[in-house]
Length: 114
Length: 114
Image (cartoon, rainbow over all chains, first blue to last red; front, side, top):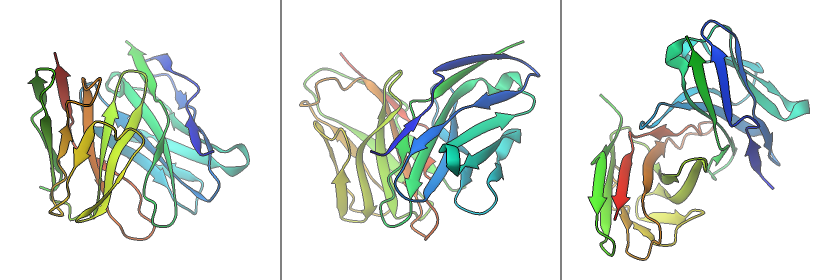
């Protein structure tokens, strides 16, 4: 079955600390992978995406993610977290072809301590 | 300025009434989606449309209906048959070019039914 798992429901980090949010997926074909961020009461914003090529992808707001096929993972990282990064983060996977539906993780809520 | 608009941002209805949520996009995207978001449950797909005059049920279509008469518009009707309609509703769109799967989201509509 196709699925996305975000093992951490809630994470708290101190401002300036590094961050890694985990995402594991189960998908039968070559995956397209995404990370989105959602501030409270707002829509989702695309942080970065992986389709092919370099397995380390850079996104907006200083985020990066690494695709590891052998581990079926696409973890999101940031070297130094800012208070404004506090939000909900969602990982999603899709596939090639005409089926454009995405499969979503349940999200990780990030809190940032000053 | 391209994007997706959802109106209104907050909507209140009495139980037993149908209500229609608006979603408009000027990104010239072929595909559009409706999601429902409840705390701790991530995004659940209600309906999606890959082309004008065609749409498919998602994972939780019962109690909802949609239409896609124009490329730019994909309104969602929450009917009185939806047993628990209070939620945050998100509309999204995506291009159909090969190799693109990312979805772009509107700001959402919070529906409260009492």
